[in-house]
Amino acid sequence: MRASNASGESSRHWTAPSWPEPFHSDPTKRPELAYQLVEGVALMGAVDWEARGLGDLGRPDGYHDRQVERWLRFFDRVKTREVPGLAEATRWLQEHKPIDFVPGIMHGD
Image (cartoon, rainbow, N blue to C red; front, side, top):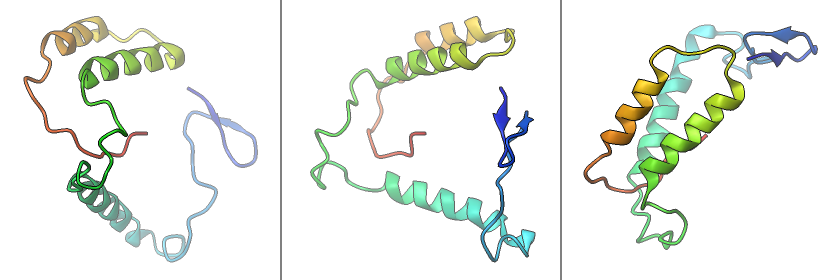
């Protein structure tokens, strides 16, 4: 997949135009961003979504099936080559659905 960078040039890899401080001048501080992201996702996952009045927000039933199909459609739109084993992996995911799960809030992009 190709993306354009800030100057409009096509590239296989996207790079941020610039980092905000202090991350721009001190690259050793950048890994901390990953830790903060993980902490934020964990905090979201700990929210009692039903107690917060979000019971009508999502659709937990059938989530696994929808996700498998969603990502297959996405992959089909952006694929640049055939991926060996994709059909087998898809079949495995469809045949090995979670027996049960606890719905929660998650980062979804």
